[in-house]
Amino acid sequence: MFRWMLPQAVCVLSACVCLVFTYEDDFEVNYTDTFYNEIGDGETPEPTPTPVPCSSRDLTKWDKLFSMLENSQMRENMMLQYADDIIKVEMGSLRGEMLRFVAQYGGSCGVAVETAGRRMALQLEGRLKETMERIKPRDQTSARNSAGTSDHLDERLQQLLSATILQATRLAKMEHSCLRNGPRAGMGMDVKMVSKLPEAAGNEHQEQHVPSREGALDGLLAALQQTREELGEVLRSSRQRQLPAGCEMALLFPMRSRRIYTSVIPEVPLSISSFTVCMWVKPTAVSNRTVLFSYGNRRNPYEIQLLLGQSSALFTIGGEAHLVEARGVVSGSEWIHLCGAWTSQQGLATLWAGGKKVTSTPGVAEGHVIPDGGSLQLGQERNGCCPLTPSGGSGVAGFEEGFDPKLAFAGKMTGVNMWDRVLSEGEITQLALREGQGCEQRGNVVAWGATEMVPHGGAQFVN
Image (cartoon, rainbow, N blue to C red; front, side):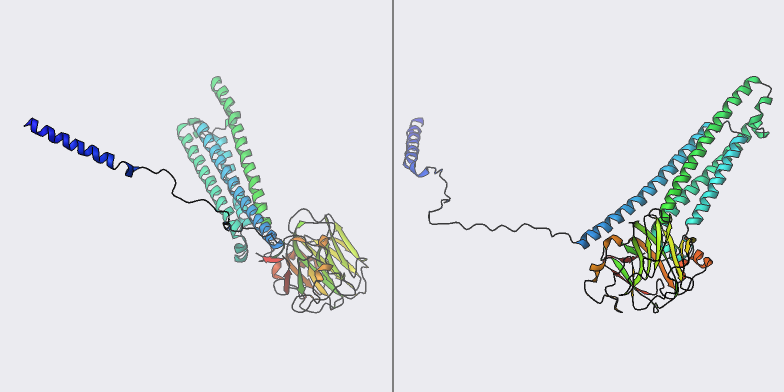
């Protein structure tokens, strides 16, 4: 059997070998690249178009103005956050001081701790209530104007007041605990009478604790005083952001420019022989001569002018030859109330700052009458080019070329009023009350909130 299968196996193996040699040439592997990438001499490839890169347009003056306004809003938000952080830190430090005080002297209290603790708690509570009454808006209108700031301050002050009441309660509990545990405290013995105790060792021990308690109380009182001063700074900063005298809006002059001003169209013709001009201003920057209120015509562009200097207020009638100046009435970028009054009968010109008469000069343009037909501007002066049309524009295009940017006003302005008479001292004093309602009293020539006022350039009304 084996002999018969062996020849068959040899035959099969021989057939396989023959097949391999037969198809050997058909299995050659070609390692060359089949892609055709050569470029002929006559062929020129077309360039692939590339997109044009994006180019940012140049910023215009309006874009820069809006950027400055956004930056100012960001700074204001940062200041509010900083004020909130100050109050939080001071509340935490006050709480820590009170806790350390209670932990250290909870078992050895006396009449001095009771009296000093109660007095400090009552004083702090009374001062905080008084402060809260001051910063509360007088009416719903001012509440809406100061909602963004007063709500935060009111909430923080409420928290601080609650913490103070809580500490006063803890001091009262500590007092009752001492009265129960200490027989001498129950007798109402003053800490200054320790020298009458019979034991000398006990006397020395009590005398050593009196200075330490007094020192702790002094330190706590100093911390509370510092907190009160910092809260006062926050409140003053908040008041500067609010509009004075119950005004609901203000004119914003963002920068000094010859194109930024506000034109005013009076209610009646300005052919008058006496007048009073009043306004609230908060300057951002003041030069040697900054125009607040200006009225003039083609013949004389300087009939009425109310101006600011570095630290002074200036008032002219009928031209620069009739100048009245009050020095030292402007200080920093704070709200200030200014009034200028004049009568032709005696030529008496008077300047008021903050409700007080700062200067009065007779013989100023005596017998003069303010002529009609001129133009009235806020924040700039017109150099006699052209009167305004009833629509609030100019008679000739490009009239702003006559304006001087060095005279332009930058800041906020509100409560602008003008009367055709000289106001009394009491009337001007009421107008100058920051917490009053002076904006409700309007003039009969120019009335704030009623007379048409047209802002130009970047000037605008703000709340």
